[in-house]
Image (cartoon, rainbow over all chains, first blue to last red; front, side, top):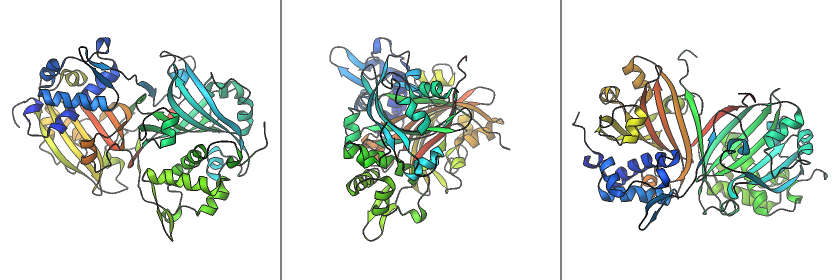
Length: 251
Length: 251
């Protein structure tokens, strides 16, 4: 084992050192660690990370390329993106999750009764060919696009839901009111995908932007699946946060 | 409320209908729903989704652009990507998670004792300036790159760990053996980010490819944080799966 050294002294590519530094800074940006949203001056970062000035600049360039920070002459490096944390354990709608950050509004792009593909019927446990309600929404926080949600709902609840104010309410809250029971569990699968040109345009994101794609099947408390959603979150606006538990070795 | 209709009959952009169809098919691809990894013929999909042939082709193009499927003349549309599910609840190493799918090997790119930035010391609850062990690994499944992991470990466990076979073992398993106790909880934050050129090259992914980026702080069963990791998963190789629970309204 060698003596403890600053990262700059290891024989590694500058790109590797810049990535390492950018990862630590990214986390600090996301946590709101920098007062007035100004990152420390380059000289401070050189000292703090034991890195060369070139490595510091490369690290800041990585964060800038992600749209997290911007460099302003005479001011320094500013945090310009706001990322919001979505929970990975508690089942909450977007407005419920983000109520401290502002107002969620939903642009309803499509609603209607449709004959779903077999896969959707199977997931919602409805007979093949039985219509379901389809709702497509572009969701914004304080006017800024966050996600594009494609939602399939069982017919009875879905039809009632279409009479409600979808622009200003989470579907979750409406489903609980209409069903007279709480929601229970939801199964979720997350992927990182590049935005296709049309989805990027709808979300006002750059073509190819990284999206957090979620597929989520939500059940009522009694176990009935009622709400199947395909959600594209803008990667530069949303993080997902959760806690993992080490399973029992005998389980 | 209108009569139930096929999706093609709604007055929507073809791009919107193609996205809707692609999302359902993507899920089926990920679930291994298609025998012999061959998607149904276009005519079948036209019928199944009540969509025009052009919409079906657009939907398949979206999946092809994501690298999930390939169209082979005379054969049809083939699933060409294998995506593996990582859990969002159970804290497991990559080899533990993927043992049914093959062998995980780790290319150790860097190891060493470093003086960490203050943020890392704070997360690991070690005194500022106290060295920690840094390990950087490119992780492969059956030879195919899955993730690039930047790992900070508390000194006592980290130094002992460097004497172990890091190429063929999960850090989690080694930490449990060396500490004589189980791991406990880990806090994780996920983001979708575009790969910078150098990270893309290391992961053998296209420039700008969507990555699932995780920051994960792992504790021993006694609560001591010992392992801070920054992980870039290739978006086209990994999904994350979990269950959400509706919180008690009074909680």
